[in-house]
Image 1 (cartoon, rainbow, N blue to C red):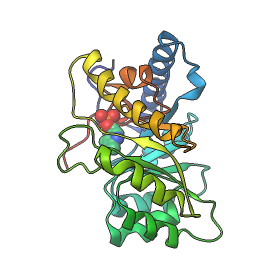
Image 2 (image 1 turned 135 degrees about the horizontal axis):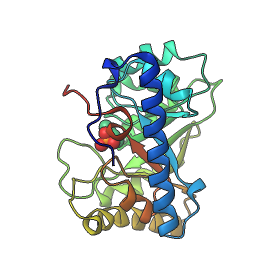
Image 3 (image 1 turned 135 degrees about the vertical axis):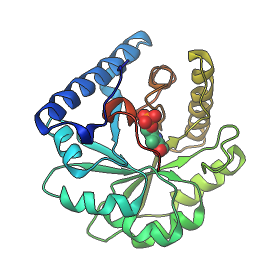
Length: 245
Ligand SMILES: *Cc1c(COP(=O)(O)O)cnc(C)c1O
């Protein structure tokens, strides 16, 4: 674990560069160790650097260490950063709440959406995905417990939404995502993630081709990897603690 992360914006450029490299290395080691402990190939687990509240120059510094996938939660904050970093071969993941008046820009600028939870939003993204772009890669966010305010479909609504998305040619349903309520122990964390893995297994039995489980953050990535995560979404362990918005 990292100790006493400094706010990256307060560090001078060269030491920020070194510090980010160390933290990235540390996260990669955690992912690899967790994968090996559960007999998985570490190559099957992707790392999304969650760069909300981080300036473009910090993202650029991390990209120089080879990080390619970045996650953003707030569209207004993300768009200027995406524009400023267009010279880099980055993949952008939208992981925030989706409002219908924001779908056009999400469909234009992002390659992935992890937080799809309504048919209406899916239809809008499908219509608004530019014709020159490949289909938008999407995950359905599933609510596993009391996540009031966090979004996500109930388990009962999951299969109907998956069927609707399957009809939309400009979206490609890749899998499921969750943000479980925080749990202290590894066992409790793993139990939540295993529920999401079970949901995916059931959809696969129904004929869906789903290769993705987007789950695990700084505090619980080991449990998520043990339960089958294919994307972990890491913010504070890479960039340091966020200021409250
Ligand atoms: C902020 C955020 C993360 C990263 O959380 P950390 O605990 O900082 O690693 C991951 N996923 C989502 C959806 C988030 O909003």
